[in-house]
Length: 323
Ligand code: ADP
Ligand code: TRP
Image 1 (cartoon, rainbow, N blue to C red):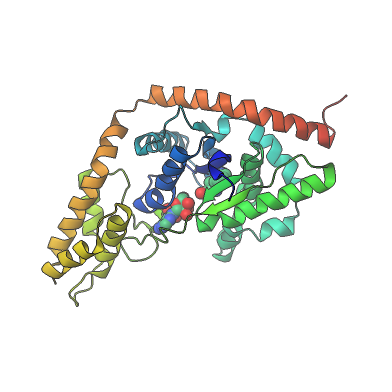
Image 2: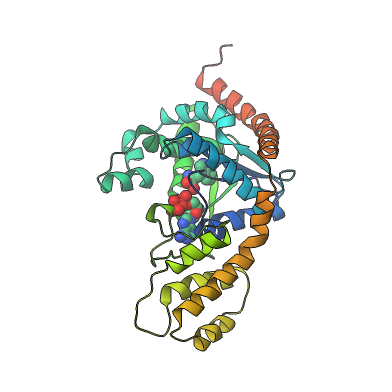
């Protein structure tokens, strides 16, 4: 097997709301782990992607600071990782346009984010429609080998590969094909109502919440009045135990001991969540906006030193650099 630690990795998250523990365990924590074992990692704050859903300048600005703070609090070392913001590097927009000119409307109509919105009878904006080619540009600018993402983003990486093949067929071998890396270990983290935890369902437990916020979320977990074990409480508790390496037999014993006592079990979950979150929450509070701006400025400088070279080759190939 080839040594994957030498491969170049890029992934990112949208700054579109407070991260919940589903995001943390499925996306943030694995990204932090990869960044420790791999030497060439790019982490991007996808703020232009967030613009497809956030419509308030002050709110978006807050979400951007929040996400960088989350990354740093979760253990990203900005000296090892190129942590940068999409909108700080105009190369993304330029390549996205070039790629959009290569793929068909029919092809983009089949992309999940767009298709799902339309299927729900909601009006999608043109940004959402073009979203996969912006994401392709994010990846292709950096000659990326591996893109770690959740299952829901698999198709977008396939779209990036399709863009490469269209481009290289038309202009010659300029862009590199990326591969997705799907984290299988976590699966779907359930929310307070038992459905997939998602900020759009308002069923979340905040990943960096205060004790009061955690308490409020846990107390809202739906329990039915029959049965010994509150299943939705147990399901979330189980994810926490699995992810923090605690024995599930211990958890079974706890639920056996407090059979039918839903309040005691919810209190236990609040305590376990708070114990896990408190150190990151404290670290997070110590990170200033000024530090975040410094980190992003250094990050985009590194990012541009790579992307500008790819874009120069693209401009040459497509004929817009006059010789
Ligand atoms: P949300 O559904 O809350 O809007 P996003 O779509 O922004 O979350 O997802 C960001 C990342 O978190 C993606 O990699 C996605 O796969 C992961 N993710 C979101 N919700 C869950 C969940 N309930 N369980 C596991 N992973 C999740
Ligand atoms: N679309 C991704 C999400 O919603 C975020 C993202 C944007 C991304 N550009 C990317 C992820 C490039 C990986 C690579 O989660």
